[in-house]
Length: 387
Image 1: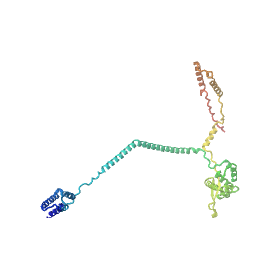
Image 2: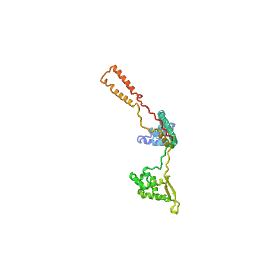
Image 3: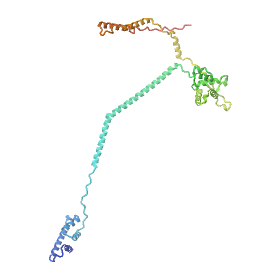
């Protein structure tokens, strides 16, 4: 009944009222009912159940059904699950993992190939040179070490030989003074001699200045009074040499004190303190060094000199005049032998033969054995007369 009402409602507006008649009304209703039945069968078919609702509605509108009939038919359908949307998703882009793996493989292959090439070049060209250089440096270093060891051993041997050989040589006198200062026994005489020879006070040996000061202080005194104290000695030298009061002179006084306290020719004697003021006072004396005797080498040289002959004049060789004459003759022959043939362009065979004979004679004359002087033999040593 509802379907008939819906069909009538749907057919009512579709047929104009002016043309409908009571006779055609059952036929129209049967047609609408049949159309709705077909539409219901269409909607319930399995092939159409899962189609889109909008597509079904559009299809039924095209077949002549109105909106009310379509809505009623759609309500009659059993509830359906939501339709699954079609699989129209875009395909994911292809994976870049193979390309990445290929790139990593290429990179590692390039690195390995480059490393292999560098290793080949290094072991083929550079390593032998580096090895040769290292071996050469090592051998050179060992050679230098051996040379230094040999030098050290040679120096040690030389020192031992010198220590053995120099014992017979005369030793230098540590306390020797110039002859023009050795005769001075006072500071006044010393300064006068230095002024005459244009010698500065700083150039005078400290030993000489100290000796003259001690000897001048001891003039006219005996016993302990002739022994000068350190303070009196430096005061005496400063009174004669005012240069000692300057800055350079103070440094020179330090040298004087070192010489006074280290040289063995200056003897020190501590003074017995009478009071607390005399504590640490030292008196100084000068003891002339004992001259050492001649060394064994000098004795041997003296004996050898006395054994040699005294007549050292050159003796005349007996054949000296003959040798001089032959020398003059050789010079004259050398100057005159080629004079007749100098202008001739082509000499004859006889002339060439003559020249050869002259050259042969010249060689014989100029032979050094012919002009060797007689070796003078030394005369026998003259023994000293026996007393």
